[in-house]
Length: 604
Ligand SMILES: Nc1ncnc2c1ncn2[C@@H]1O[C@H](COP(=O)(O)OP(=O)(O)OP(=O)(O)O)[C@@H](O)[C@H]1O
Image 1 (cartoon, rainbow, N blue to C red):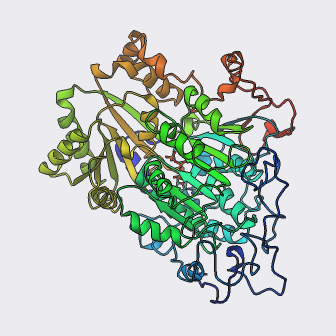
Image 2: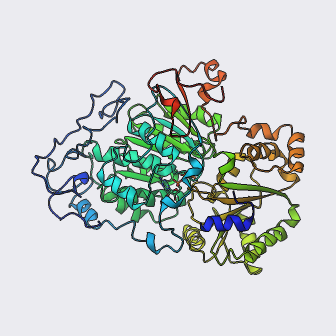
Image 3: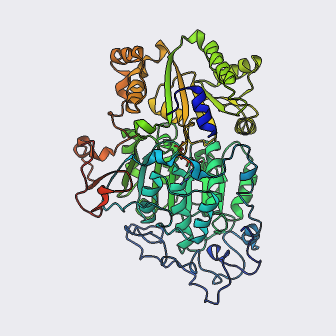
């Protein structure tokens, strides 16, 4: 475990040809050798529609993908190959979709050009994840896998996994992918930087490749099959970039729509056809109101940073999108919620969006292998700048800037971000800033400049707290500590990602007493050194901590269905199994995973 800034820094340092152009070929066939097989049936051939199914696409099918055709049947697909004439794919009046596919840019092309990219992702410290505690609850939980080979994602996706240089699945992927492939709804709580994006993207892409779906009913309207919602523009862009890699040459088309960018270009992209739409809620509502997107054919709904998406800021928009437009209801569509934190109130709200779901919690890494070293320093408000300057000078002295280590500094307000950025620049520290009052162009420029190391200090508000995967962020400074401990968890999670180590420093003073207890608890759970003065603050604070407390467990959330209050509340949803597994060599909790009594949770 790194114990100093210098250690942290050094630890942190630590086919492409498209198909021939021809008549319409269904997406999943387009990268395959020509076949003499007859074209598939043109219509949806999944399970019979249930009474609940208002959309006519078939009902839920627990234990298997809800809309898929026969496993490995690459001859079936969106409305079938050839059977729909040779005009091209969805929303495609002139075969433009095929044209688009011919032009599909290689999303891996830039990878080697990136200054910081390490030779391969297998170099990450996966051993750190081996003894991580995992808990699942819900009915008939499908067992986890240990390798990507065990998961039948299809040849094209497997190839992309290799292109991404992913050697083995991360713990959340080991559990979540089989659950999602079985067609189950899922609420997954796994620590920051642990590969949740792939955990929901792989099953969606694979499901779309294998499924048979009706032809979109109207031209000029986009009918995505999957919707991935995320709270910020930058995160949506990042998910889009990742999903394009995972879907490369599968024929599955991924489009992104987010605010602050010209809508016309996004409309043009949508018109060319879309299977997976990645969007921020605001822009999506706009597109829905303009009737340029219909959610009628949605089969997969994924909410990344789901707790943020369902909190007070976003909830009305999410309800509008999911419940008040034309999206198929829970049980017809498959819904997956992912985050590193899941407060109970949010889990309760999420019930409205889910059907017979599985709760998956992947805990924080154990003490000996903890990836993020957390420090809290007592700094008066007026001393914060000079203290930050000392830290940055020390980094320089350690040669970290020479090594391009990046520092992310979180502040509470947009004004504060502007002012600190200015001050840092005036004092010779190359800094940039990102917050909600900057134009999208400025935001993107700042992020790029930070990522490339041109300005190795980024001052940010919470707009950068969630989801952003920036390699080589070696140090996160909480210049202002957030009021909500979950925000602290997401912020420090910008470092120590994918098995790498990182350092997080927080400046604490009287103004932060309300989070003293939750902060001390969190640090203790992560086996971090809690300063005596912080423990005293924690003991003194009678209320603030309790609001934020997680109940002293090793996870970012626990299934609220286990609470006695859940049943007292008259909610009749049944959750029957609790499986506990620590480590993957001997998944004892999965010995009788289907309907068995399971293994009692460490929490019970
Ligand atoms: N199986 C894998 N092998 C190697 N690297 C992986 C694997 N899965 C994901 N990664 C890498 O790990 C990093 C973190 O992944 P991702 O951004 O999905 O994390 P996350 O869990 O969504 O984090 P956050 O909670 O902060 O949103 C990414 O760079 C991703 O490419």
